Amino acid sequence: MTGKANAIGIDCGSSYCKGALYSEGRIVAMTVCPTGWDISSTGSKVKAELMGAQPNLPSDVPVVATGYGREKISGSHKITEITCHAKGAEFLFPGVSFVIDIGGQDSKVIKVEKGKVSAFLMNDKCAAGSGRFLEMVLDRMDLDLEGMEELLAMNQAISLNGTCAVFAESEIIGLLAQGVPREQIIGGVAQTMAAKIASQAARIGLSSPIVLTGGLAQSGGLRLALSDSLGQTVESAPKGIYAGAIGAALLAREI
Image 1 (cartoon, rainbow, N blue to C red):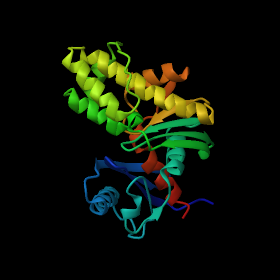
Image 2: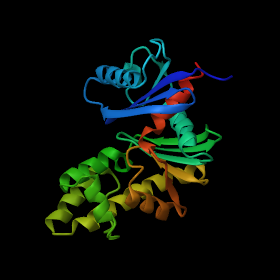
Image 3: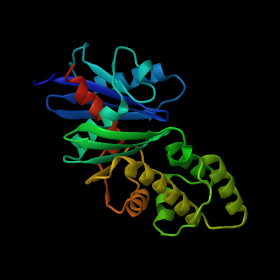
């Protein structure tokens, strides 16, 4: 089956809503904005931006929504983010065998065979391996992602004892009060997150090549921490933050 010429994918996560437009054989537009409190309105905004990026699109372009807020995206078909991330990762990084996605609410590890899911595990019970935990840490230390990268590049880390987000936050507050340098703390946080994800990966069986997708895909420091914990190189997918949206758009072609 050739598939439809035009299709839209919307990946509405807890933090950001991403969109991708497929048209005539390629991804022609991508967009991202904060999800906010009104998921339905955010999804409509993302769709409108994508429609505006390609003149003369028919109004009945198929839409697949995925992610945390997919049920709130009107006029769309719903597909799980596991399926969409696998499809999108294969598109961005042909031949990928293992996908790691660190979302705002959870972290996911996915075994992939030719763009299809063969096994997966999602951790939505412990915040310590999620993007939300990292956001809390960065806010506490007055850092953004660029600042985090600069500190991680110093390759210093202090071991953290806390194994859950609540205890780790208390421990970090104590370390800051003791004057422990931020680069050591953020290095310890990266190691803690990587260890959580390595534990997940071990349960379904690691295979390579391994690709990190999602909003942290371009973090060289986090990828290095993951590579150390996994014992294998973790690659970065170009435009990895859009993997779920791209996968959703590709799947929308088949509807």
